[in-house]
Length: 242
Image (tube, rainbow, N blue to C red; front, side, top):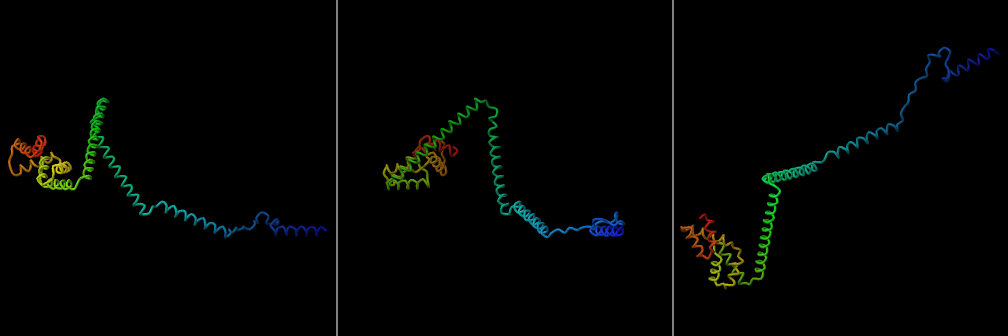
């Protein structure tokens, strides 16, 4: 009986040893279980490849967005140059204005107010003069639109004469009357020819000096003889340096 029990115990220990549940009496302290190796599945490798590919795509997109094309760069450069030029012009204008206004730095408030008032008066006078000139031009245009055939021809003849020599107001009317135009048509033509009679006096004074010598007073009298007023003659003689 005892032998049978011993045999059963030996068989049991042997079975435990085979399945790693126990060790033999001789190898209880030295025997270790064999190492186990773990192999990663294929789906894990495919996922890693996708992640790397995604990173590469993102880097390419960022690179393309961060580096503008040549055309875009040229447009940006042109805009930068334009804005730089505009800034330089504004700065130059500001410096010029600052220099111009520097002479008023030491003025009192009362003096500044007086200057502003004077400037307003000058501005108002200029505006009134511009409006008067515009009204006069409009009236001349209305007169031209309503002119008769004879008046238009008289105006054309007056402009022809003024293109090669100088005339006074009355002298040009007389010349047109000599050409056969009525006093009314001649007057209309001279009123609308656009001549500056002070300038005409200066031209006539220079014409006289080009072929003869005159004293100042003699030249003034000659211009008055031509039909210029005393003021116009005085202006003409002064304009030629007399």
